Image (cartoon, rainbow, N blue to C red):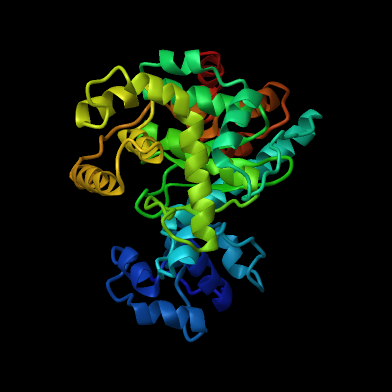
Length: 386
């Protein structure tokens, strides 16, 4: 027996598809396993009210759009904020839409931030952030030096790292200590490297788990500079700091801030003196390990300091981009408790654990917050002590 048609609201169905980032053709392709009769025209007819999807199809649409089925029966699309400013689109005018994975990451991060606020209120805490407002007219290198001092960033600790992930945890904890939430979610770096949003009591930075650790370290402080400027947005893999548009100047400022913060000029020059040629591959690798950053960051800092010219910089970065495109991604994943703390951060995870210990959070909210079931709570608690 065929499943019945359900009286959904067509414009809500269209809204759900559009905010999820799918075209009618992509939806039809995703539903091929349900019925080969579903075409882009079929999807359009549902959204125009000319026909209705059957319940089996509607369930699949809810899964695809990451929405509860009940939303399709609302009389109007629910009100949701637009995605953060897309710096590639604004700076270059390229009509390159954000991927469904990136749009989902934005929704997920915003929901996690809202959940943190709700849980904090239940616990009787007031979220606060100590992120000063700075101007684009300032000197980003000097601001980086000031912020290193204000945050208590230890150069000795930084130079002691022998693992990029340990460096990433150190920097994440440092920003979370001043009230930022730092999440790591899955979205393609070809579409976006990271994004940020400023809210007075809960600013957040979101990194891509598909990026390598040293890439995330740089993006973390690139996005922190966006927070300082109160100019949060979605930043692409391809940096836009060569453009003289307003968005290009913001990107240039944030790149200079991040590079100066992670690799202070005086320390880099001192370290470079000890290499026969700090600008060749061996020298760049050695310096990148020393500061726990990428070779690209070191090369860019050497360009800023006049140790290399623009042509050499472009040749090397093009060479690395070609090699990176041919690399295979590793498969598999960490244990649930490691993944939970890694994606949510210690600050957020600690709030959820405390709420669970005090009986203030339901199992569904716990799963939404940490992505693990109740049986893993003790493992998450232990992971937070590591």
